[in-house]
Amino acid sequence: MLRPYGIKGQKRKKREERYDKEEDEVEAEEQSIERAKRAMVEEKEMAMETSGKEEEELEGQTHEMAGIPIVPSDLKTKKPGLIFVLERASLEVAKVGKSYQILNSDDHANFLWKNNKNPADYRPDIVYQALLSILDSPVNKAGRLRAVYVKTDKGVLFEVKPHVRIPRTYKRFAGIMLQLLQKLSITAVGKREKLLRVIKNPVTQYLPVNSRKIGFSYSSEKLVKMNKYVAAVSDDVDIVFVVGATAHGKIDCDYIDDFIAISGYPLSAAWCISRICEAVADKWDVL
Image 1: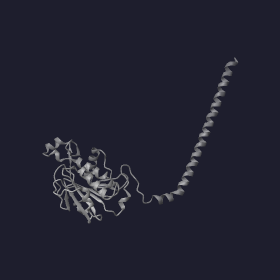
Image 2: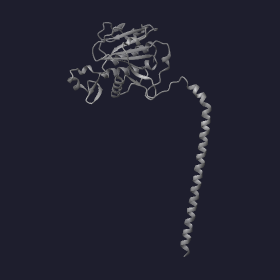
Image 3: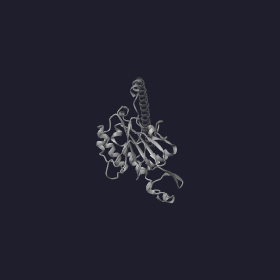
Image 4: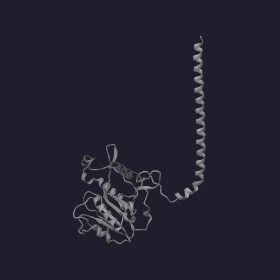
């Protein structure tokens, strides 16, 4: 008769010991929480003491945003700079089906034929590749690129900031161009700076007064070596290069000082721009 009672007594003791252990663990957790709170208070006090010094050090610094690189410090210097003007860019918006899109020869060939338009004239990928060549060049990363202006076939003029990071895929680029032509500007996330904005014509009002404006065409009779030609340009003037962002044809601009050809063969806009940037980099010792 005594056996069951003995077993029950042992079980009760085990439960009491376990309960005591749980209380100890709770007390230990409460103590660790109090220590953590004290450490946080001490850190806040230290931060308050050093905040004044940190604010002084952070003044004048530029904060980098996702997808938007910091503008190089060399941009503030008074050294001569480089400006690109892309003429006759094929960026036309049309309503295809239920949505508005940037027309291109690959996706909208049937739509263009139905509207009596030649699909070969709708090549927005040319201006996309040209912008990549300009903005990814060492000259731009060194802070010597002043501005990029793009003029469409329809006469719309817009500015591209040198520190803009163009999307790596064409579809995203087409989406940004569609937004730009519909809303007239694209603003950086978290800032009020307009990275791309539609501006009033003509482009000459935005070009420096003391600048040399050079146009490029395969049909030009003046065939030159780009390195020698750029080396002969004065170091005191900004250089404006006008390149056609079109599949074929010659740009017709009355503000160009000199029309030159840099190859005996027709070159794409991207390849022409790469030769220009290499020659300018050699002239200004940009590696």
